Length: 282
Image 1 (spheres, rainbow, N blue to C red):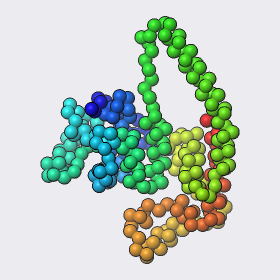
Image 2 (cartoon, rainbow, N blue to C red):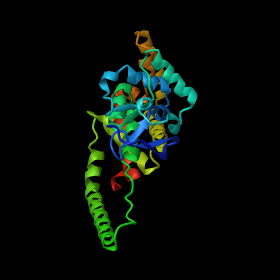
Image 3 (cartoon, rainbow, N blue to C red):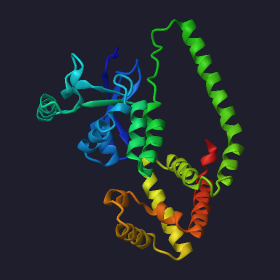
Image 4 (tube, one colour):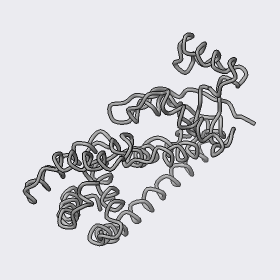
């Protein structure tokens, strides 16, 4: 049974604001509206809905998504939808077409990312898991007895000490992970390192800036222009009959992947950025 859905306020991911929502998939569970997911990914709501509807057999109703148009006592206007938008969804349903105002769980969002299939989607997912889905409401202890408040304070103190100990233990392991980045899984490994660097400099909003700085440094060291190589690669693929949608998904990392020398330089630069930023400090 669907648990109560409630708005918890405005959340931020970089420069994008979205509606914080709890419930629907379990008490205290975070959820996201498709319209907010579209804004975060820089895509149209229609495109995200189409991605879900075209793969609806992969999504489990009530576990991965909820159509809030079909939930009693929920007014979509509470979630920022206009009456005109609501009417358009109802109109499509009345015509027998698949349509809805979708709310996705973390599990449902993860499945959506598998469908979107681009590096940006995975980068955003890392940030959302760290900064939104894993947030938990602070327990109100003001009504506890003095004895229980004392034990709660002791527990928090011990928890902080345990966290500090684990952070110290992780320093050497994290340095080892940075050094261990290799050519086998270099795309995934470097992306994770850049995400870690971004977290030390403001989170998702800093990611693109850091990535741009890395590209600039690579071009300086390798005496090349990634933008020109990217254009050339897309032109070649166009001549081979590759669809425009696939060509548009190409990015500078795809260009780097074509040149072993560029891969080695790129890996070295990312490692340097990670070490300079002190990402091993927890």
